[in-house]
Image (cartoon, rainbow, N blue to C red; front, side, top):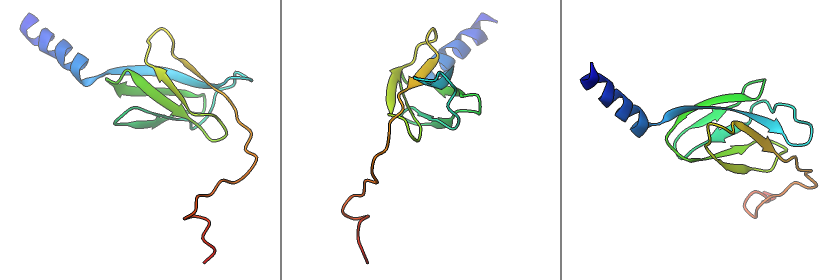
Length: 102
């Protein structure tokens, strides 16, 4: 039994671990629906209640949502809440190639 258990533990530590968390508005503390959470290989969206689960071995994850400032955070099983700062969009920003009038 020990011969089978050890390779399974080693494989799970090499290929990642399931990380659970939630994405919330920093000012209202309400959950953010459809926030985008990604590591270097995978992308997941938060649920209606702001919750997400991701199988990752990366130590740094990134969270973003429309109307909020992007945020990079370290994966910590003790701190599973991510608070995004809302931003006020004052203009539509276009680069040179998208502003073509043709």
